Image (tube, rainbow, N blue to C red; front, side, top):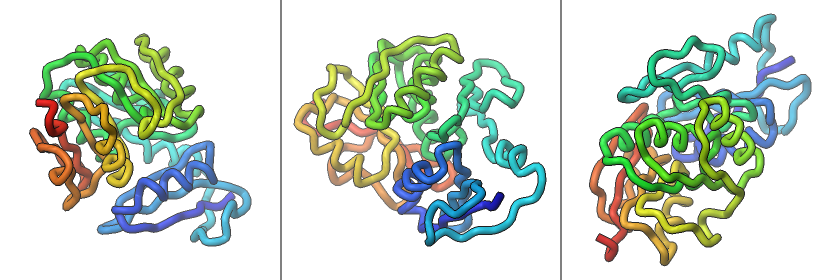
Length: 244
């Protein structure tokens, strides 16, 4: 067994993570090292020729779990099922990855959600379902979730049941497919995808967008109402222009 690593600049973290999830469907670890992000997974043989590698010692599986830490954002505790939960928990099994909620972009989105009055929303690119479940815990709803990856749709449904909540979750290309009406979209995506999302003609009044790194903003496309930063990752609550 070896650990295989991919090092990229922070701005390229999201596509690197997506690639590594395809190579390591049992889960990956994402770590910040200065202005770089290291995404790693474990395998007996190299799944691609361009990855760094290093040997691992006995107990590597437990150390992999240690990287998936718990986080508290506002009144919510977010963490994996092998850590004893605290009050108001959102328990997320990373399974085929997609995140437990401790990632900076997720925490930035959660900070913004905690500052907003609850109401109906769509979670676009829902991944593990952590933002959908957290939003319901904060009183948002009705809520619907969408992701283009069928594994993410499955993971979100499993995690919803784990947390005793229900919401519709379906496969969709959120950049192009028709979406139901809702006054708020929640989207934790990389900047280029957020920019494409904001080019849709059917934008709602508000979009909670996360997945940017410090120095990036949607200010040129929408009016920024609020901002949150966590571990160098940026979330913005924006108003789509012409929609109030």
